[in-house]
Image (cartoon, rainbow, N blue to C red; front, side, top):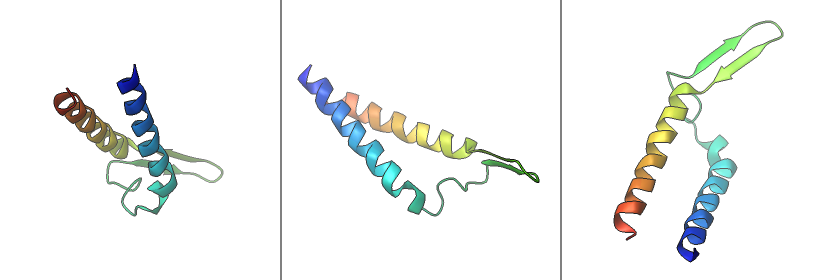
Length: 70
């Protein structure tokens, strides 16, 4: 139980840092696979490539935590 709470706390800290400093990263959210549609009164933005990149990164981090955390 204690180890789970520590890992959840670390994940929350990483997410908080990402939310705070994420907009300052110049490439995040502007990758070539991100979809942006602008019309007169309508803007649709779907960060597809950014989502895939973050998913791969988080999966790698969780894999490393599982492998070396035991």
